[in-house]
Amino acid sequence: MGKSIMIVGAGLSGAVIGRELALAGHRVEIVDARAHIAGNCHTQRDAETGVMVHVYGPHIFHTDDAEVWNYVNRFQTFMPYKNRVKTTSGEHVYSLPVNLHTINQFFGKTFRPDEARAFIDEKGDKSISEPQTFEEQALRFVGKELYDAFFKGYTEKQWGCSPKDLPASILKRLPVRFNYDDDYFFHKHQGMPETGYTNMVSRILDHPNITVCLSTWFHRTDAPASGHVFYSGPLDGYFDFELGRLAYRTLDFERFTYQGDYQGCAVMNYGDVSVPFTRITEHKHFSPWEQHAGSVCYREFSRQCDPQDIPYYPIRLVADRQLLSDYVTRAEETSGVTFVGRLGTYRYLDMDVTIREALDVARFYLARAPGDPDMPAFLHRPI
Image 1 (spheres, helix red, strand yellow):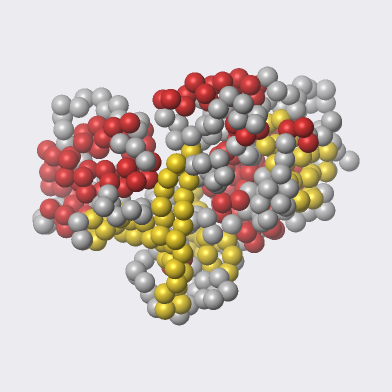
Image 2 (cartoon, helix red, strand yellow):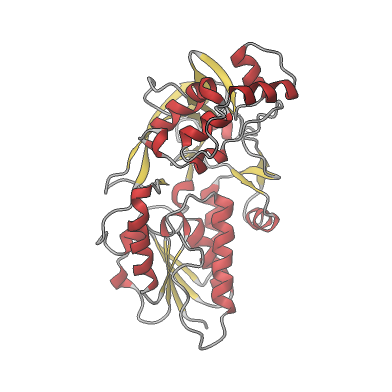
């Protein structure tokens, strides 16, 4: 029998690492402070409508990683799903990402692709040669009108600060397309688990060498005297926030039900800063293979994460870099623990990347020769 392993967090990182080590003969104890598994991708049936609800907001699986796609399909049947996002701006509805339809509708044109490309190029602010901020990146590539309509207000609400204070790299994830493709993602494999993410994670955790303890808080003094800890909680939380708190955004959800089809799509963004919420999600549209008369919707409000809140998005502004560096140094001076996942490495990670990195971490651990020193604090370093 292998060494005793403790894993903090029963989300994707903890479940995948736990299963891989359990298969290799290790005894794995997984603890989670919440009363359920699957972390922020937790799903459950709504008792009133029967709709499968993404309790902490929608999670759409998309990847080009064939191994990860095959891995999740071992534990769930993934049904076809394409994320087609709409946005309300100035009392009109448009498609996102900004594409040829969006451009023609917004400007009242009938451009062909080459014409639209040249038109938007003219709109771009060519005086900005090397964009440093989100705003500069947008103005350089799409111009002021599209920036004001689709990016400025939404970004201010989502991040709680001016786009002038955000790095240009954030906007690189939001492409402009000069065709009519309105698929939000461009990955080869896209889908939704037929019976929800929580059921998928439950199947991953279903192994006799795995013990799961929910509603259980972890402190670093709880680490086993021998063995190893894989920690997917907040990096600063592991050290009791002794150096200060890393900045996160969190989400508040205003749930409401509707008899019928409320908005005709899964995700409707609201780009105007005068609308206090960032988007409305209608959850039955995330399972288009199901039929439900009723509907469950969430209005999403983004705000700064307070100590009692669930952290969602690491902000990673310039002011956080030194504090993050100090925590990374602290972690690398600590033996017997490896930090994993979105919170443990203070990075925004899509689900497929989370699973890929969890597989990498487990395989690295199993590949070490007997007598090798402890695992590094980070296989995927935050900085």
